Length: 234
Image 1 (cartoon, rainbow, N blue to C red):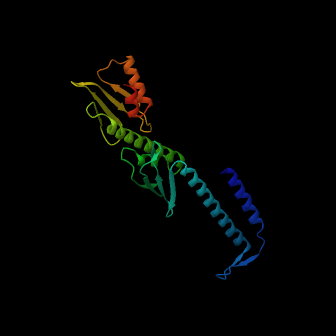
Image 2: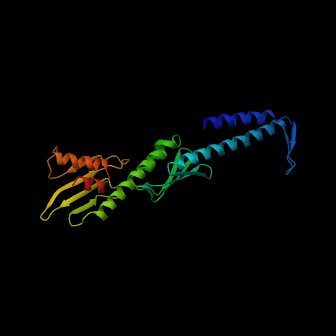
Image 3: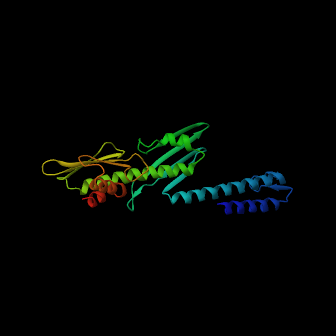
């Protein structure tokens, strides 16, 4: 971006220095402009081209994050964030932000447990990069936890395992392992960090904390998907 900026500034200098006419008549309207007015017109055109190039570079860089940003009206931005997990794209989420003085109007389709309004007020308009990265991480972690939960529920043996979650955020997932008479132990996965695809805490009932089996189960769930962790810890 820096090289492009320097190049654009050099081109602008050369274009402006080459404007030597004293007057210019606009062919369509017949309007007569002096040399200074022509230079100002050329300068405005160069600024518009530079801004268009800057927006294009920003657009391309955000596309690598699975994100699209489009300005509309005079002070509004539309943001589309793609979500993906395990090599597959899932649903996109949408954010519309309008700045009117110090006031910001935010409309979005992001789950309520992600504090979009707070992030907008804290980060925008000064740090769009950090805002996009934070939103992308939070949505990626959410979709990952949700799809891990679904995969485990669909593949687990219902006669031996029961899995449930407290709410739509999937920040707490409970796995109850059953035997012929009673459950052996209950595993609770806690996602305190909403941007993490793995649980930050693993709690196990009816199993001695610090035992080899306890530590092996905790380690498995903290470093693997739920289904894979369940498979390798048994």
